[in-house]
Image (tube, rainbow, N blue to C red):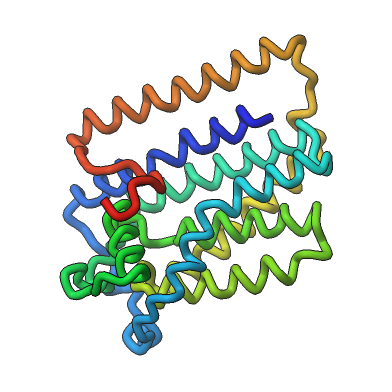
Length: 250
């Protein structure tokens, strides 16, 4: 089942190249979604800690469910299918309705040399300012919150407390507009409805004829995703970083 997670991560790598394509369109709808809350929200660096944890919450949620035997293979497949559908929808929105958060971001040259400042500068560096609306941080983490409560209902308040800090963090470290977070909640909730629909129908419950066949499918799908990523990068002329949480401080 870990190969399912690898496949999901492979498609997540499209994030920055898609943002690059959006930047080439010559349109930016940021002015239409800017609210007084965006102007009033102070810059609060410590919220970056909540924001960074979002990179690990989805994988941690699925791994915890798998390792405690609370999730079987069909459940994980349905969770991945709904998550990939959510990614495709958001990538389409990013291209149809391009929004850049560049105007929100703090000038990295004005940030200090402390740990939190370096972490924010790193976040600015690894993620495109485009793809702002809807927030993928919010949509993905709300979707996985619903999956989390399905398997660990007693721990939902701990997740919610972190999630609330992360949502505030998207605005407090000047990564997203307020409406980005609201749109992310709608997309995440819709993805979970899709997961529920697949579960009611009993979709993706088939048993693979062999472990090797299953592994070949997921590895092959991941390879195709990476090949498609390479083709997109070449066609778009993108030479920036992929959205990978590595190289902090470099």
